[in-house]
View: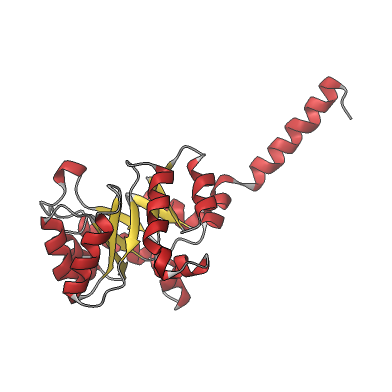
Length: 228
């Protein structure tokens, strides 16, 4: 499984990139607003993220256009900012039409806000490079987001789509992951990617038994060295 970070915060991205396991970045309008981002600075900020992680690391920048023509125009502009920009579009008829045009031009699309198998299959068929089914938001309404993710993974991998074969084909980004257990379950079912908030990524590194073990090692080493 590849690890993406779901944030627009440069300091968070820089820290996780230093771990040596960061494979991508996803952003959205809410995450950009959370860091106090301004419209006039949006494209410059996306470029900063791209430069921070390097050309081989995909960075999803979301279009806020609401028409097919607007999505295509904005998608082209975003893709021209840096070679690792992926245009993020929300699943809807307009976005499917825009995805087909952008894909035919070699522009990668991350189709987001996927909540059902038909949505995922339509996105893949239209030419999306990445499909982002959500987990946590199902949990918010009392449904099992992991079960829904499992259905999407199983259905999408039943078929070949002919798009992006030189890059390994369409990949599933398990999104809205809120716990280390979500990450574990997504990995076990074979999702290609987990995009994870900074705080959750930090939790993925820790475990109570690891903490206790380190404390025991430190205490025992003090006995060896005579340190107080």
